[in-house]
Amino acid sequence: MNLNKSLLFAALCFSISTTSFGQIELESNADLSTKYANLVKVEDLKNHLTIIASDDFEGRETGTEGQRKAAEYLVENIKSYGLVPLPGESGYEQEIAFTKERWSSIGANGMRKTFKHLWDFCSFPATNTSIKESFDELVFLGYGVEDSMYNDYEGVDVRGKLVMVYDGEPVNSDGVSYITGSTEISDWSTDFRKKFRAAKANGAAAILIIDRDIKSRISTNRNRMLNGRFSIGKGEQAAENYAPNLFISSTMAQALLGKKGKKVIKARKKITKLGKPVSLKVKTELNLGFEKETRTLIGSNVGGMIEGSDPVLKDEFVFVTAHYDHLGKRGESIYNGADDNGSGTSTILDVAQSFAQAKADGNGPKRSVVFIWVSGEEKGLLGSAYYVNDPIIPLDQTIVDINVDMVGRVDNKYEENPEYIYVIGADKLSQDLHDINEAVNTNFNKLTLDYTYNDENDPNRYYYRSDHYNFAKNNIPVVFFFNGTHKDYHMTTDTVEKINFSKMAKIGQHVFHLTWEISNRADKPQLN
Image (cartoon, rainbow, N blue to C red; front, side, top):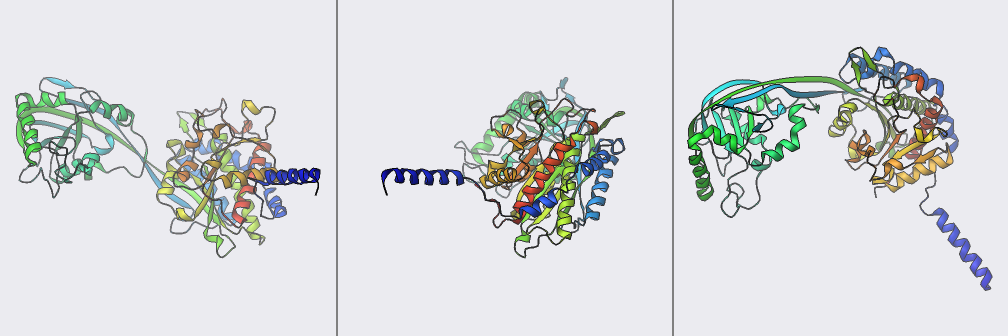
């Protein structure tokens, strides 16, 4: 072989290697994929979205009649397609309670002083009940610990009494805990609820915790204390579990203790030195008036499944998700949420119908495909958080989540090229998933895939702001499809007539192709 031929051969080898490196070969039947992807049609999407984003559904706010109507619509359709319920007793709906607790009023005064909430003291609504009590005595009770190694409550009657304790736990001058026997602290320091529970169990009327860094606690938790936030479930059931409780500043503690403050400091020093509990009764004056509001919403996730045809691979599950809730009504104004996220809801409904048709034709996927419409997204991704915390399908059998949130509009950047989609998260946990998505797009719809919002430095942080993230937190590869925001985002003007259904259908077809490929290929996308 002469030199020119050798150089030519080397160049050819280099060309082949660089072309194939990082690419994924598609394994599913392209003709079948095209046949069923093409069942995602403009007219079907428009029919679904016109209903889902109608005034009759009143903006689909979680816990409202509109959200329940939307859930009924989804269940009715997926049952008619032939999707089967998810395993277990939930059927097509997984009911969820969301609870928000906040103070309607909160006040404390005594010793000729009015104490200021979020300055002299602070209190979490979630761990408290409404209380209106006056006290003329308190019991200083060390650290409020009730443990086999150290017990502040032993031999002390606190029934109906106001208890004052220090934060943390008793340690000696070398920082060794009297509870753990080492410099490692116990959960009496890290879980303040233990002190609330102990006070409740011993009959205390209320407990004050002297917080020596109260400014930091207030700064970190100000919004939770003022406005509350929705949490999953029916709340912490404070009346049954905790004594009413306040974190108080050292200044407020001194005011309540008066001249006995020095005795309390001596008692703390004695505990530090000897590791033995010390209690002290102190005359004081404290009036508490707390009024709490509790709001509980009952929502539901809706889900159905196409069971896989392969006897082994059917126990691996590809998830396709979208949230179907929105902002609801504010007075007489309805936030219809056509794009957010009626578009994603309708898209995966049509994708589900296409998979159901493939299954009915004897061409169903090898892996099982699960479609879930979650509620509570607008309350803080709560529906998807509930699902992953109490999964119907084991998370270790869930191989990927494909999430669709806002795919019906065109942002300013793509006014001249509406056939695009922002792709977020595909390469965060699995380069395979990113490569499969790229290959599917190259072979079929040829959308412009934009990774702007996938950048870790992007200030919008969209990767953390939709339901796929709760799956990603559990080490499940995810990809999030998103059209970007627009002037109607979270406005009453996000309505059906502004939806680009042709573009939406192309994205729905892409979601079908990607789901089809992952559900039929020999190997699942691998974690990096």
